[in-house]
Image (tube, rainbow, N blue to C red; front, side, top):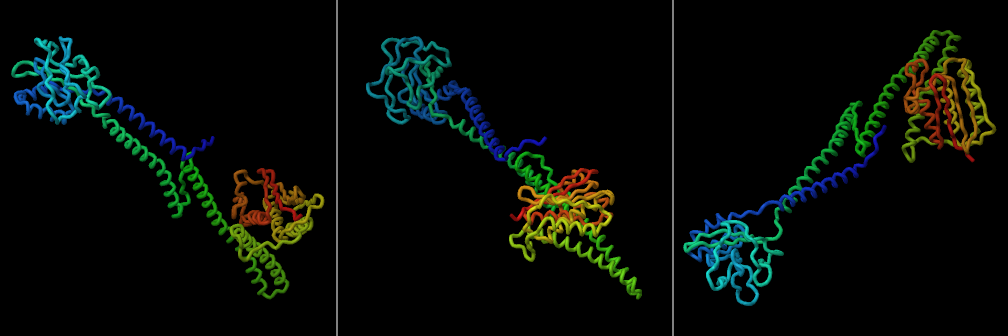
Length: 494
């Protein structure tokens, strides 16, 4: 069963869709993985790094600014009385409110200054009167979110809201303090788009490589087979087992190579058959001339009659070859040189009667039955070429009939504005596998009988080309061992 045809364009489109789906899946997976990555900050290491600078406010503030630039952390340091020591963000991050209900003092009225490192020092956040409550939280961890100052949420303006603050104890020369940390919102991370771009390029690159290889391999097979065939290797084939346009191209190439191989083989057979057909009459002519040279008048007259028959056979053979070649040229050129149909009014009845007389004269032992149905209309055709069509069909029927006692039929009738010439025999028939090729030049069915039957395989080819030149068609029905019927359809002149 033949596989369904699939379009190469559809396959390329499907490859593009698969690549798009893979890129989308990679983007989703990358986004999912990145969103699950924990954001970790080692505040204890930062606190240890800040400890030597706690006695120098300028160095401490400079180090805090450097940490913000390098790590993107907002930091604020408080002593045990909740007094701000240093900060790299304005306003400062609020201290933790463990163990107390009130928050640090509010800054002066007015909008808070912008988030910046440079600028005036932050305001002194003084605790309310009374002893401050101790920082009784765990030494390091994520504490509860502080109450929002100024009646709203605390953030630095770079996102919809602040992330939770992180706290750790800070060892001060005068006691214990706390270091408050919050990551800066830098907007969407560039990592997911970058990874998506890299994965997309990888998917497209791999897909392009596989697609190119998938297309170039059959093209390479076609090129290899074409080079081999052009170099004289008639067995070169692509053998592409594909169901797309490239597979169809490969099959057409293989069919062309098969036809070319058969044609070249037929030409070799033509040379062999021509040499055989020419050798026999030429040998008889030489013998007849030698007999005539001996001076016997009766033998000379007999030899001359045999020479006339042999020359007639040679003339027929040459005429068949030339006519076939000229008709082939006519079918391929708009204005053939040196060949044209000489049309005139031809009566089918008279054409069949003359063909029957010639056939009976050549084969007096063969029975020929001729029937004309009604009065077929006249034809506007070349009588010489149409006569050759009927002669060739009759000769073909005679050659492949079993014996001289088997009759051959010649019939002419009209059908749907056409005149049909029908020649039938009860011969050996034509094998079914040879039927598509019987009109090919130099093709001969039953090659084992070719030497006995004669001919070079141009009779049916010439007949078909003559019928085609008249705008008609030729059909064949045959059954091996039963017989063959040939029908030539010629358009009527009316």
